[in-house]
View 1 (tube, helix red, strand yellow):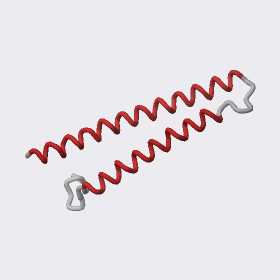
View 2: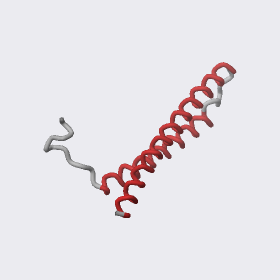
View 3: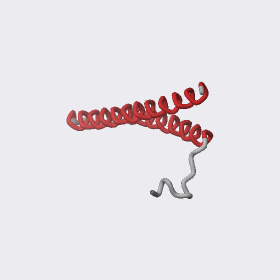
Length: 89
């Protein structure tokens, strides 16, 4: 019922485009940060267990980012399809 209230305002295409742009920048920044962490993770570390742990954590974070990016891409594809379908009509 809250969604249907008079306060509900749809997002504009400009707002959606800005969110898309911000999301892409954020995902790229995260990927770059993971890469940088990966290059720094083993500097000065002697323990194989610590190296293995850090690698596993970074692999997990990288995999999570990839899944988020995939979900974002799927959602964006749905939006683009809807825009194309509207233009066809």
